[in-house]
Image (cartoon, rainbow, N blue to C red; front, side):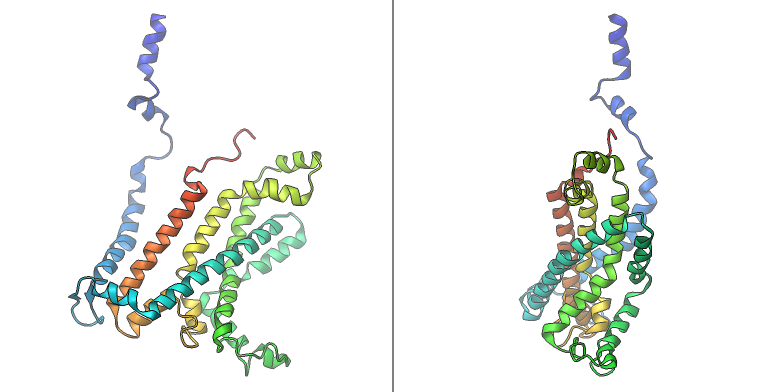
Length: 311
C-alpha cells in the first residue's frame, strides 16, 4: 500500500502542474510565433492605423489633423451611411439564406461516387477558376440591354436593363456573387460528407431509413461543424463584397447597390475623406468579428470535438 501511494505521488495528481504537462500533446506553442508575427505585422498594425485615422481629418495628401470623434458623429448621422448599412445587412441576410442551402445540397450531391456526378462537379467548380473582375466584366457584357445575351437571342425578357434599374440591380449583384462563391462552399460540404463513416448509412438502411431520413438524421448532424464554418465564411465574406459590385454597378444606379465596403472606397478615394472611410472600415471590422464570434458562441463550435470517436 505504501509503495502504491508513493508511486502515485511521483506520477503527480490529476490537477497538478506536472500531470497537466505530461497530458499536454501537440506541437510546442512557440512554433506559432512566426505566423503570429506575420499576422500582427500585416493585419493588426494596419488595423490600428485605420482606427487612429478615424479620429483625424485627412485627404490622403497632407498631414492628418486630429479632430476627436468628429468623424464618427458625422458618418453615423449621414443618411447615405445609414442606407449603406441597411443594404449591407440585406446582402448578408440574403447571401446566407441563398448560398448556404444551395451549397449544402450541391456538396451532398457531388459527394456521390458516380462518374456523372464527377463530371458535373467539374462544371460546378469552373467559377472558382475565374477572377472576380473577369466574372463581373463577363456578366456586365451578357446583361447589356443592347449588345448582351438578350439582344443576341431576341428574348425581350432578357433584354431588360438589369443593372440600370434600381429594383433589379441588387438582385443581379447577389446572383453573380452567389454564382462565384457557391462552388467554394459546395467543395467544403463535399469534403465533409465524404468524411462521414459509411457504417452510419449502412446501419440506417438496415433499420429501414430512407434517403430523406438519412439526410436529416445523419448527414446534417455530421455536417454540423462544416455548416458553422461555411456560414461564418459567408457572413464575414458578405461584409467585404467590393470588386464584383464595383465593376458591375459602381454602387448605382443612384445608391441602389452602395453597400458599406463600396461606400468606404468611394469616400476614401473619390471624395478624399480618409477619416470618414476609416470610420466605416472600423465598423466593418467590429461587426464582422462580432457576428463571427456570436455565431461560434451560439452554435457551440468553440467546444468542437471529434464526431467519430468509437467508430
